[in-house]
Image (cartoon, rainbow, N blue to C red; front, side, top):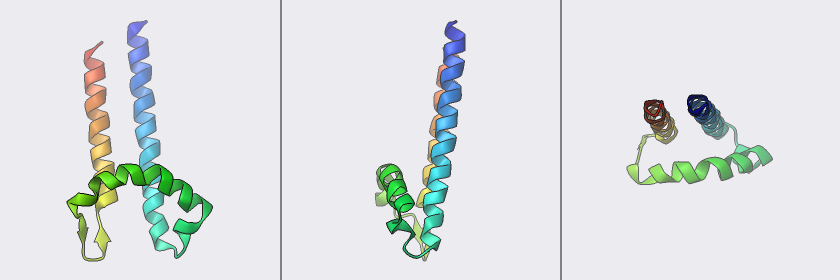
Length: 92
């Protein structure tokens, strides 16, 4: 029974990370459309994504007109999820 709960927890964490990564990509794509951040969806995504993305502000990941902040944030989120998965699977 203990093993099943850990496996379900790992699955839930991985799905949440995947879903949040999709939200981050959508948030990034909004920058291509003028006024998109002022729409209902833009405001909602800003409330969801900005707290996490703000942790990377001091890294200055912008090179010219291209900002790599969201790419780095998604990669680190994925690595953290994989690390957490490994730790949880070690409990089995």
